[in-house]
Image (cartoon, rainbow, N blue to C red; front, side, top):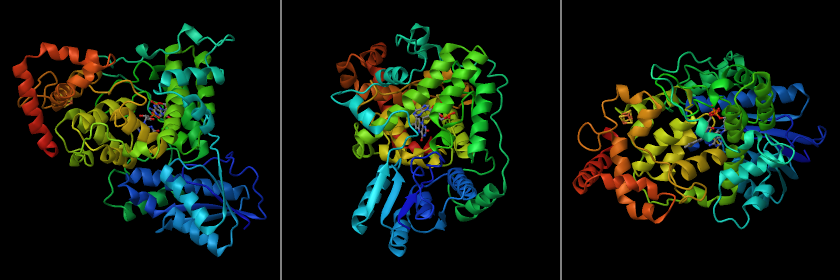
Length: 508
Ligand code: FAD
Ligand code: SF4
């Protein structure tokens, strides 16, 4: 073929700009299943299965529509090695693709094209509201990057929740304060279950194959309920706006045992595979707002995640790579505790968040940020090991979105380039936002000693250790104010106990 058009596993969009000018007579599409991709990190079985099933369903769709497709099944080679073979064997002159969501692969494709002396046409990913160039222009000359200003610009530019004069709907840009309630004391009550999808023959074949090929990989395939086609993704969206959106906002941060999905949308994997477009998600939410007279705070809170955070972290990823993957602001060096991979810990909050992650490949934002992420920061774990875990274990994890959230937001590994302060909290926060502490061997309010909650001990230890730095900045000064109420002696005990914990993290 004249041109080879590469479609990656997270680019499953029939409207993609890569397909726009395809000439079926002289062009060829290529999709590659590479074992390398699954083994590059210790990937959750459900994540491997989701990608493969979604890719195979997309291939069927392409063939149905008459596109010329070469589909390489379960290759032991890397994507780039397969491409090299195909390009050389078939005398391809040009390689066309959408910019990959992973910096490493982007570099590798550029190097390959150069090496083979062929033309590479890497097209903009039009899935996103904000183009790469637009983000670069917004970021120019800024020293600090804050979601809030970017988000306001997006709202105005795309005319979402603004009036004719460009003022925010409801007189406020951000209703975050209304979106932080815990569940009632007696529990979350009945939550409408997530939409469910039948496992068809293609998915079943993939599930059997993954179980056979990667038996030792983390995670379970017992419950596999992810949308793997465009049709299912649309159903998931419709179901969410009809049944679950109404309580999304208020309980966005709440956690409860055996409540893995809360009122969340569970749309991230469909969005990230590009089975869903963010514009249709935002539009569906706006329609539901009027139709069901929902609270503006819920609608704004949800749209902020999609139009704000999701676009913002992508912009930051490309702006800061490859440095973002190497940053280690606090010079933390400890290895990740082994129980991150099997959930075998006595800390009830970690056990629940990791347990559901292993079962479903999913945890909601606050579990990722304030439970597993918070602990990893307080326990001084090497950021690269933490990032590898997040990339491996969540079905929605693709580097452009995983890395900025983990390294940048949860671990403060870039020294706060886009967060004003480290997101750290003691057991008191987890107690307030969940029922985890009730069934835990540890006590959230105890700072040291046998009963002490390790998160509480490590929290105070972190503040003691970084006190000077926290006090130097007006944004973090308040956080150390409470330290003044802890006697010097108790502070010494906290430091000693923390050291014990840090030296035996695997035993928690
Ligand atoms: P909802 O809570 O229903 O939110 C709606 C949508 O908003 C999500 O589907 C997602 O597309 C978007 N969104 C919400 N928060 C963010 C955010 N911080 N950044 C980008 N998009 C956001 N999200 C991923 O998609 N992939 C990841 O690999 C990923 N890794 C994360 C790692 C850490 C340490 C943290 C703190 C967050 C991470 N997130 C990641 C963001 C967020 O936790 C997930 O998008 C969300 O939990 C997915 O569940 P949901 O679809 O039910 O989301
Ligand atoms: Fe988690 Fe501490 Fe509460 Fe136990 S006591 S559940 S470790 S916050």
